[in-house]
Length: 288
Image (cartoon, rainbow, N blue to C red):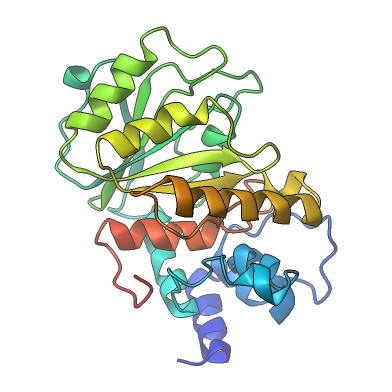
């Protein structure tokens, strides 16, 4: 299907009003991919593939070390993945329960992914953005760091379970290491760990806690760079290159491609949804 045909199909499917021709920099969010597809090519790329857009501003030598197409789904695949995150009919997306110990966690048969990161990295905001097509899902977002104290389990229909882990660092639960380490080590249906890094400040010493756990237990994990709307382009490029270099030289289990996202503009959110749908077995693409 051509990009033009996909735009028409996605528009009919989601029945959204057309976005005005010119969109200002201060535009609101683009929660559905149908809205993104109606944008001019340059702006669509910026929202759908933010890493690819950043690559344009690098010198040829700098581009060589940046993995932008390890996961390279089609526009059609990104659009199809949206159905996994859109609640409706029998497809329910809901909060299940919370737990402070693995033996208190719900016994769910589906593939599981977990999100972990430093306090105030924007973890709950990111999960809320991922679930924006299911507005009834109660994802609590607090302005105070360290709000999440337990492992919070969200069931995404029959597809997978998403786990919001407590933040580490400032105001972390006293039993954080025991709680999270046991979960990461023993949760048998855990498919992938998403490690969130603040793109404004980069990898911090406290991030080594989570990185060390993933590496020690030989877990496959992914680095998601949050708050990309908070940095200048130059600063963001610098952080991306430094983090990419760290991934290549200091890790073994980390997915080589970084996922920059903004929970404000929804840049990168659609690609991340597609990646999650793919690794949980709910979407087959040529991107992996």
